[in-house]
Image 1 (cartoon, rainbow, N blue to C red):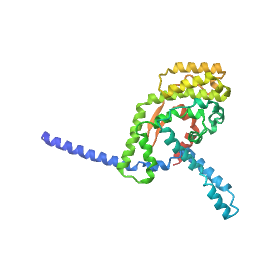
Image 2 (cartoon, one colour; image 1 turned 30 degrees about the vertical axis):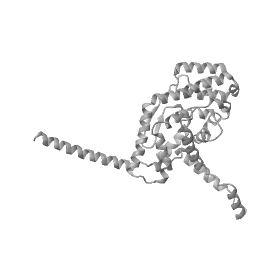
Image 3 (cartoon, rainbow, N blue to C red; image 1 turned 45 degrees about the vertical axis):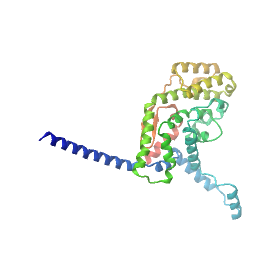
Image 4 (cartoon, rainbow, N blue to C red; image 1 turned 180 degrees about the vertical axis):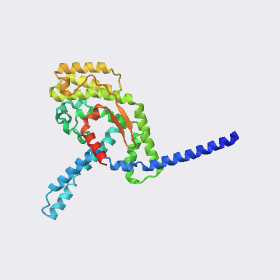
Length: 318
């Protein structure tokens, strides 16, 4: 067989392979959830059952109105209250759009509210330190330094290139519930772009987690001893760490751990009593799926261990 014929057969085979590959990709893309599908599941999975249960219990406790006129009057004066699920979705959406995606906001701003540390549910009631509380606080006016010091890594991730487009498409997906393949391809390209950026900046994620680990435990120390919030040395130490996070300053984990231990010793706080480990070093593991970027082995993730466990159980049922 002449080499030209061999080359022709090779090219034809290659073309057929390419067509099969493209067809497979298109079929696979059509099976992936659209931006609208993702928006429908914006409420964190672990909170859905809890929200539905609370909503049902609330409905059962509502007393019938005394008269139709009184009911109509009350309806005009007070708009219907949101169900817990609706409120969770509203809080989550607000935090995404007005906080996590807003590059004008610093990564962390927790020092000015240190005096509120002792009121934090993250400290007073760890069993209720859930994602619901986390988004509720970030969406509201009441500040919580323990919540604030857990948020920087999420702000960094949502400000990755491509993430703004992903969120925009999810939020606008109501207009086009069944997008064409081209639109869906664009959506997943932006997810891929954001995921690749974060994978290539894993060291930055680890650095943010390492720095905010100390900030978070400083807030826990103040929660344990509220008088520390009035101490200028405490505020100065906190602001020093806060500035380093926001300005991406140089950082030596060993030196920072030594400084933290000295601060706790001077403050009379036992590191173990607030769960501080001077040997902690952030080494996150990342896994990008079709709808989410999973981060494991991060101290922030442990705060939501109960919610994550619920989500896994719910996923296993389905």
